[in-house]
Image 1 (tube, one colour):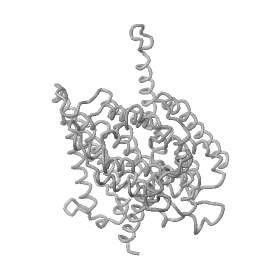
Image 2 (image 1 turned 180 degrees about the vertical axis):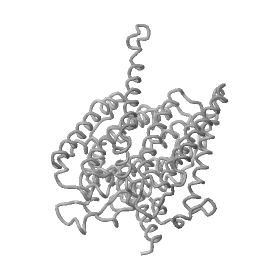
Image 3 (image 1 turned 60 degrees about the horizontal axis):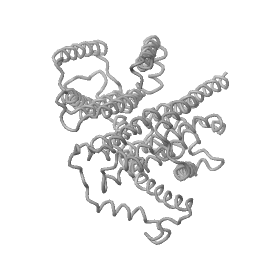
Image 4 (image 1 turned 30 degrees about the vertical axis):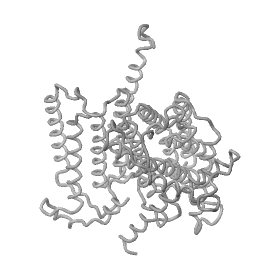
Amino acid sequence: MTLAAALAHAPVAATGEQGFLSPTGVEIAFLLVGLATFGAAVVTVTSKQLVHAALWLVVALGGIAVEYLLLTAEFIAWVQVLIYVGSVVVLLLFGLMLTKAPIGRSPDADSGNRWAALAVAVAAAAALVWVVVDAFRTTWIDLDGPAQGSTRVSGEIIFRHWVLPFEALSVLLLAALVGAIVLSRRNAKDPEGKR
Amino acid sequence: MNDALDVALRLLVVFAVFLVFPLLIGQTEHKVMAHMQGRVGPMYAGGFHGWAQLVADGVKFAQKEDVVPAGADRRIFQLAPAVALLPYLLVLVAIPIGPGEGAVGQVIDAGIFFVLAVMGVGVLGSLMAGWASANKFSLLGGLRTAAQLLAYELPMLLAAASVAMAAGTVSLVGILDAFEWWWLPWQIVGALVFFVAGLAELQRPPFDMPVADSEIIFGAYTEYTGLRFALFLLAEYAGIVILCGLTAVLFLGGWHGPFGADGLGWVWTLLKTAVLAFIVIWLRVSYPRMREDQLQKLAWTTLVPLALAQIALTGVVKVVIQS
């Protein structure tokens, strides 16, 4: 797309001289998209209108996909859109429609646990930011070279270096699948819950 | 050529295709349906066999009042048609119609994923329309749309994955470069699954339960009038162009043909796309609408196992020919 094209031709600061004081166009774009994503995420959790919250979630997830694109991780970006925007949000909206989410404000959209939730969110965010900053402290992506996040590269890294976490995740998903089947079949044995 | 000019030119061509091809298919549908049903179809607009009927329709739509129901969620209601239509425009950029990098809007490394991901986003438009209309028929239509998407997205992805395995790449251009004629019988099951699942995702008959006019008026689009309604219709026909183009590129070899692949590759792509579009229209005339439970059953008990079998077959053949 044009974005990818813009990425390919974007000016890059001379290697070894990168700093926070002379940001390139891509870095500024990254920051702005990050702010927009953050804003959308905040609206998602504070909005009193359920379906609006779900749609703001689309914006937040899409923003993350754009961030992946800017980091040259094209494959991850499209998978993000495919799985989260295309499936998870559709499932969410499906659920909201089944519960007849009203148009306008939902009076019970507030939870008494909001402060606990905020504490957990801040702690999780702090841990993630710390890990990422610690891991990539001085790493800069060379935008001029071959794409470092292409499908081939991502595949090789996942299946050569990260096979064990990958397999563990598949076991986790399998467990979730089995759990879902068990939960949805429980009513069948219950004589009173017969539909 | 100048880079910026090149990009602008490509986008312009893609945009023109996006505006013209859906209308061509719509007009063909008018005429083909009519002749299959023993009628002549539109004959007056524009003179020669009613060629300008859709132009006249467009003028009519533009003149109509744009009504937003009083109880509707205004902004989402008005935004929905754009969300339904724009993804198809983006997808069109990635579909190659000829050999080489000159015949595709933009070469995308993870082409299959890009195309399927962005197509999935279009369904959000129907869901937004269904919910924001504040109409129970619209809501039912939205629900059915979501259920249908969830059921058919999986077989579509699996069928596309089979081709990616065969070619060893997920780039649409790369897949066409690797194509051999014997892929046609090898991937035929995947092609059928992909095409059927794509039809269901576009809500074309016989999978038009979400807009079943005899039950729920017009599903998620019931409350729409004028240009916004026209945009939803345009999205449906743009979807047909995309689905047929993608099926041609992924399974039928795109610009490969018995002869003339160098200079006339784009003719082959367009020809295959047109034949597939004709089949889409033909199916609409031939089959009655499927019931909701039949729809779900077809997806989960027929298409998903078939797609998995195709992937297994692809894997086996791939290993055999490589050893």
